[in-house]
Image (spheres, rainbow, N blue to C red):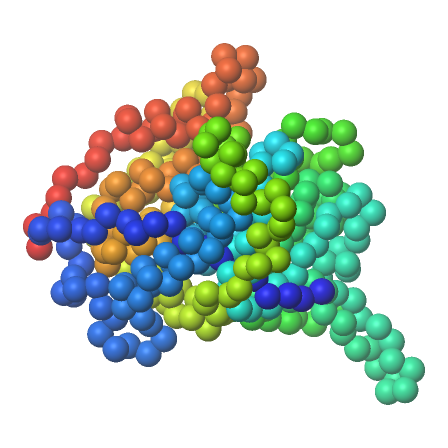
Length: 355
């Protein structure tokens, strides 16, 4: 099941001015210097703006959520959208996908879904006398997994190799997935009957988690006025394509991060492993995801270098869902988000380095 989907990026970010506290090794003019496979930061910013505007036609009044979705896409990551029913989880995923002219598939996770329903299956061909591989819905640039926690752990595990290694292994044969590749999964944390909690290995593969939340009254009124008579998803047209997104990702890979900022990212993640309220801290994979997300955040803000504020912006979406709280922390009504924010306040911010 394939379709076309597009995404919208948040509004223009803050442009850097003056002398950067963590300068890039090359000139900071926001250009890619004509290197193949890359674009200028100006083009990246404009493409992201169009995607964000497109998505915001569907998800009204949630620019911060859309921005995190864009950050995750440009960081080559996967997004977990976790919230109560009816706030637009699936709409966000489908709007982002429809905003990009690439292959898109949707998987409705149910208790009877099998791993082969996700990855594909080998079928015996009586004419050739050989087995032919029939690709599953995971063979797409953007995979929308609706209500992922309704599938059994056996089926959830079918995504582990796909999300981490961008490949699928079936009957000893390995098949590469096309780039870009992104999984956008939704789940309802309130309704527990008939659901299976995501294992830590699965949660750790999601680069970021967002909660949409209820809209304010003005945004909800605008939604009623604009969406009551028609479905805006049906009117969305692509504003970018998969090849362009691939070039944007290549540009983000080259965003400079100074040694001091790298050390700061490592210190932030390491601090989550030393908090008494945390039974399981963030993994080394979380450090990599934090740095990649910070690079994407910097690029969306018009900079070719990362500053500590970029790490602060993405820290909660990237780290909070990976932490396992102790029983005492739950009893004290502490959340993983509270712990991450406390870590951000406790770990010293590095001072600007000299160019």
